[in-house]
Amino acid sequence: MPLRSVFFVSDGTGITAETFGNSILAQFAAKPRHVRRPFIDTIDKARAVVDEINGVAASEGKRPIVFITLVSDEVRDIVTSDNCRGLVLDMFRAFVEPLEAEFGIKSNHRVGRFSDAAKSSEYNDRIEAINFSLAHDDGQSARNLAQADVILLGVSRSGKTPTSLYLAMQHGIKAANYPLIPEDFERGKLPGSLSQHLAKCFGLTIDPERLRQIRNERRPDSKYASLDNCRYEVREAEAMMRRHGVSWLSSTHKSIEEIATTILRDIRPDRLIY
Amino acid sequence: MPLRSVFFVSDGTGITAETFGNSILAQFAAKPRHVRRPFIDTIDKARAVVDEINGVAASEGKRPIVFITLVSDEVRDIVTSDNCRGLVLDMFRAFVEPLEAEFGIKSNHRVGRFSDAAKSSEYNDRIEAINFSLAHDDGQSARNLAQADVILLGVSRSGKTPTSLYLAMQHGIKAANYPLIPEDFERGKLPGSLSQHLAKCFGLTIDPERLRQIRNERRPDSKYASLDNCRYEVREAEAMMRRHGVSWLSSTHKSIEEIATTILRDIRPDRLIY
Image (cartoon, rainbow over all chains, first blue to last red; front, side, top):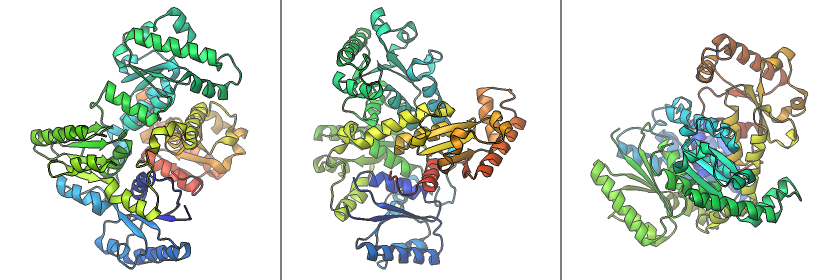
């Protein structure tokens, strides 16, 4: 794609405009230039931004994309007028205003109350979940497993750690993870600390060939990374999960987000709000 | 607000629908119930979801809010028809389609690119960034700091770890973090391993009273958590960052997302697009 600029124009910090705009732009392989214009809260500032947008439109030969979060009608009218040569995308008019009508309440933005996320209990739950998941990464601790929402099992490098952290960060889920290692296979069963929590165990498996690639980047030409060893570990891990009735999925062709979504659906569909 | 449900309906994982929906809902003090319905990719599944939405509308006496990301016209038509008694908010029709027309390219969602996310180099960069950030959490390793994109500094419990992981997971940023501790204050300067990388250092500070609360939950009634000690550490940390010319912000009233946005803006405005 040729050079293209995206403006984030807001009467506040612009964080909402950016978060929103990025969620839309993430749908495209395009890599536009970002221009942030916060605190546009007067008619004069709005006119100056429109001049800037029109200047960029002329110099790039393409109209800029303009994400706006502007509450004042006077200011918004200037940016959305025909005189502005950007493609203006207005989150408030499209979605927030219909919801204000539906809920019968004003949005935080409109009443000038910047969300103080850091004080909400939901936010603190997320931070606590991240700390829990870090403390229970890679089988580090068998303490407080009763508090875990999910315990991920799988061989080393099957994707447990990023999935645990994603579940914690995005969904406030306390996700422990436990690596299945040759000692477990020789013993032929899961450690006792896990066997009391089978209902919240979920397994990750992976194609042995892909596992070999990943491990080889870490420890080239090791026994750990050899295809034979990868095949052995994956086979034993799947057999063990089957024996214990632990459901699992393969991370080979799945992103963290897809794995997390599947786990949430299977383990606890609706309990958690994040 | 009385009980109200929000549905996230998608033909994929629903991650986009959720991210988008949450950015809108964050504008309201409301705490609706979340219902995720991923993988709605057939007419039959769409009809079942509409039945469910209508059931909730009847039982709650309020129409549910329904955020959708549905590519297939057949499936979308069912959910957006008059027969569905939800308030349907369609990110694709409102914003993604105008951008597809403007850019002259199809969105990733539409071409199904998400499904092989695990193979993309961007995805692998994110996983690598997560591993890097974990290995460099809490000053664990001074090795390879040259590879870090960002190094976060701050006293214990100022928010470094969740911010580092968020930067890695969401933006593919290799974020190390280093805790400023009393030994650093007595020495009066940053360790040599950091002083060569000041340009990518960024500080987090925090209100001492808030810090006391957070630490007290971890180690009640300890010297570590005492208000005097929190005041001392925060004052010394800020003085040290000032001496080294490291810019910082306060995490007291900011969410991880807001902190991350500010860091990205200040440290590397245009290299990384997220």
